[in-house]
Amino acid sequence: MILHKLLNTIIQKASWKKSVLFSVLFVVLYAIINRSGMGVAGLLKITGGANILDFEFGYSSEKAYTLLTALGAEGRSFYLTKILPLDFPFPFAYMLFYVGWIALFIKRVPAVKEWNEYLLLIPVLTFLFDWAENISIIAMLNHYPTLTSWVVFLASIFGMLKMILTIGSISIMIVLLAVSIFNSFQPKQIPNP
Image (cartoon, rainbow, N blue to C red; front, side, top):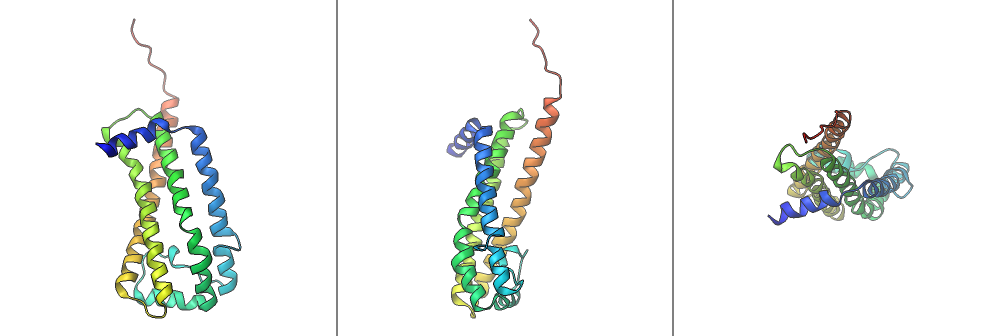
């Protein structure tokens, strides 16, 4: 009951202004973590193209070891001290982005089912799985070259769930946007006097 009320409050308070603000925050953090010298672009220069575990859809202990080895000592240090600290606010930003837009579209689309508000949990779970993956990767980097198989397994599972739910969040936004646009072209019904 508390969750239901919280989600409905988020939907009621959704606005274009908040969604645009969350979009700007998301784009800025995306640019910093992926395109700047402090993020993945900087790492790629150091490593000559070796990339981070976050972009892999599932991996074994052997693959994780190979990827971390390819980063080299400087790349692993950069990953741990530059990229991962950015990769905690970034998932929060994209969660706000997805929740803001999904809530706004739910608000604009007449509810078909009572459970529509629970769609907001998809980006929240994405955020939580991303953080869990980051914590697991920190453990791997701190213990490299020794990798504990269950930590690698959890990081891999959390990463896959993050990716699947990200696709789910994007899909929900697209469907709700399409329904919202479709509904805006429907003739308004005039109540009978």
